[in-house]
Image (cartoon, rainbow, N blue to C red; front, side):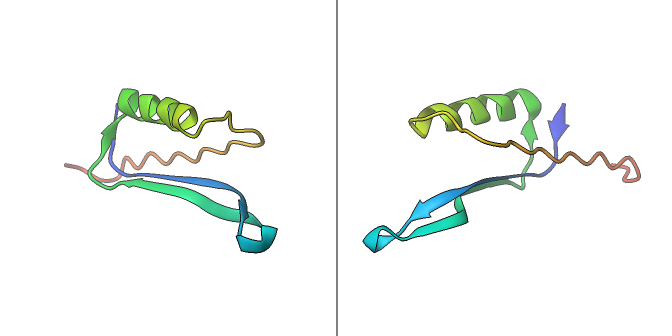
Length: 72
């Protein structure tokens, strides 16, 4: 399946200088405005988890919109 637009946002706790915590901060953000194959998106998500050096803990939310009103 080809996905036209994809936006991935990793949210978590960011530690600033002096040890201050900033909760619900955007740690990473990725946009695929040119589209991506679903298989490639799956591989990207797997490598994102591995490259961060730790497993993501907590809630993972995925929003998918399939708009069949547009014709190409």
